[in-house]
Length: 419
Image (cartoon, rainbow, N blue to C red; front, side, top):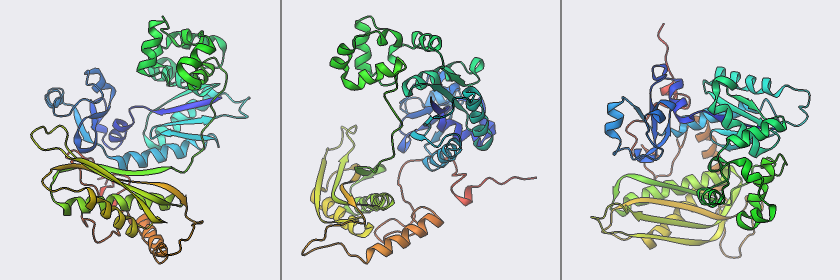
């Protein structure tokens, strides 16, 4: 059996944990640079505030309905996610973290356990230890656990936010209830095609011929059909090293000077290097891109990228930042107002096993230096030690006018209780 655990309105719930006064109040969380809505509480959804709504267009709606608006606080959300996942790992040794607010658990050898009680116990413990409300769906396959979770979330009073599909009768009833466009893995294009064939529910989909599904929806669609039929085709995915790492950001303001972009690209390269070292990899290639704001029709537009094949594999912040600035010099043009830049590293090789070159190799002295920097930053906070080319005051330069405190990751933001 598989369980899908989903944190309810996760970003909004994180903001509420430390602000009890926000209970039952409409909340929205905005994307980077406070651009658009990326999370909503149930109360905000009831006001018909759509996902992706531009913040400036809905400013009057927010004001009229006293909607509490927050800038995305990913440091807080990431830490709370880690706490939730740590609790869930105590219920099964087999856990797949599917996203920041979702995880699959595999219950092997739980034949004599009451899985409904397991789900209720998970929900109670996560709520007590973190304050985050969760929904739990349990079923014989991953796809069916998604369906069960949707039912748990849709009918919290009847299910206590935990639903188990453990019989053929429950499976049929659930698939008959679920609309085809709401099936996990069925995109808008496939949903439109299936509706044209009078396939309106998940149950209708399971009645299609295997050959037709494979022809029109590939083997992925066929696996999904079998999963909905109760045939296990998808197991938990193991954590694998990334094949590319990107650090990209939009700026809080438009940059015209090379010096400003130089500082940003250096910071992005350092971030990529830290991630490489964390997964014990080195990169052999690097891409840098910059572009202006395409929505500013009153300004000239410029967008370019360049990929460098590095002379040697490295994960040194110093060396990668040098290569990134070399790439930036090739694509930067004065006279433009730049809104976004990014650094992408790829073509990885293991840190412990590097092929030496005849004439040019990485500076081995950087290895202990990077280890020391990582240890200091891990102990005392993000990028306490930085390169001289980086801004010494701010790491990420984004518009975050409504940012909440980092209650769990910054000692200065820890809540104080007045007795």
